[in-house]
Image 1 (cartoon, rainbow, N blue to C red):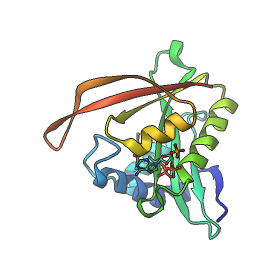
Image 2 (spheres, protein in one colour; image 1 turned 180 degrees about the vertical axis):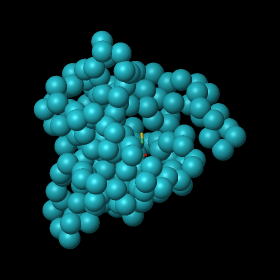
Image 3 (cartoon, rainbow, N blue to C red; image 1 turned 45 degrees about the horizontal axis):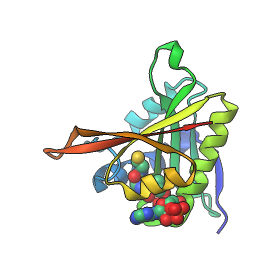
Image 4 (cartoon, helix red, strand yellow; image 1 turned 90 degrees about the horizontal axis):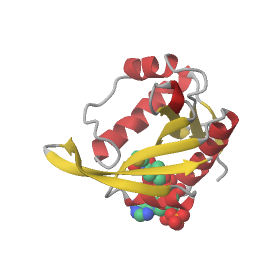
Length: 164
Ligand SMILES: CC(C)(COP(=O)(O)OP(=O)(O)OC[C@H]1O[C@@H](n2cnc3c(N)ncnc32)[C@H](O)[C@@H]1OP(=O)(O)O)[C@@H](O)C(=O)NCCC(=O)NCCS
C-alpha cells in the first residue's frame, strides 16, 4: 500500500488524539497516563511556533495512521537548533514500516526547518522505538536509571540523538 506524508492540519486532531491515547494506554511510549481530549490537542497544535511542525502519515483512503512532531527541546535560544521528536503509529498498523517512512519524513522536515539535531527520550524497554531510531541513524547517548514513574514503578529512560 502507498502511504503519503503531509503536514498536519486542525482537521487531523481527532486522529492525532486517538493515536496518542493508544500510545498512552499501551504504556510503551510515554510517562503520561491521563488520556487527552481533542480540545487539549487542538491547543497543543495551534500554539506551536511555525517551525515546530506536526506531520501525519495517511493511507490510500486518506486515513491518518500515525503522526510525528518536532517539539521544543529547550527554550534557551542557544538550543534553537535542537528539536525533540515524538512519533506515534496507530496500534493496529505498527510493525509494517509506517514508522520508518514517517521518521524519514520528519528528518526531511527538520532539515528544511534548519534544525541541526533531533533528540528523543524513550523507555529503555521500547525495543520497536529503539530499533526504528537506530535504523535511521540515531545513536544512544545514554540511559537515565529510575528516571520516571509509571503506574507506581520507576522506569529507565534512554536518550538518543541524530545530527541532521
Ligand atoms: C515505535 C513506533 C513509532 C515504530 O513504528 P513502526 O511502524 O511500528 O516501526 P517499523 O515497522 O517502521 O519498524 C521500525 C524498526 O523497528 C522494528 N520493530 C518494529 N516493531 C517491533 C517490535 N514490536 N519489536 C522489536 N522491533 C520492532 C522493525 O523491525 C524495524 O527495525 P529494522 O529496520 O532494524 O528491521 C511504533 O511502533 C509506535 O507507534 N509505537 C507506540 C508509540 C511509541 O512507542 N512511540 C515512540 C515513543 S519514544
